[in-house]
Length: 116
Image (cartoon, rainbow, N blue to C red):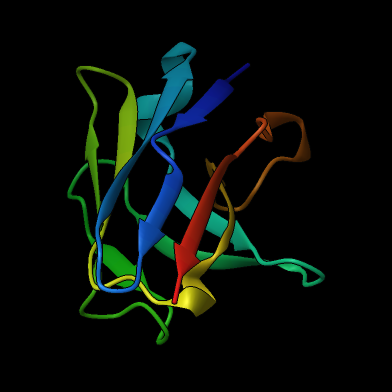
């Protein structure tokens, strides 16, 4: 079983940066593709970025390409999301989960608010 705890969100102005962290418990973390998801107010939860387990291949939603960077440290059981050049449309609650996602893995998320 994997438990995920997200942190690092906050309030930032347009153009600012934040770094999110997702700390995982459980030995299976290291073999899982991990991803960040975002849920904007009134919208569904969408995939933002993913990273493979061993060779750290990444992929991004078109809306964040060139601005966000996902990384992982398997020794620390942690996944990161570096977010630069933030825009108001990046506002939402950010969650991490595996890919394919496992509903039981959802944590509390971390709120990101970008002011214009």
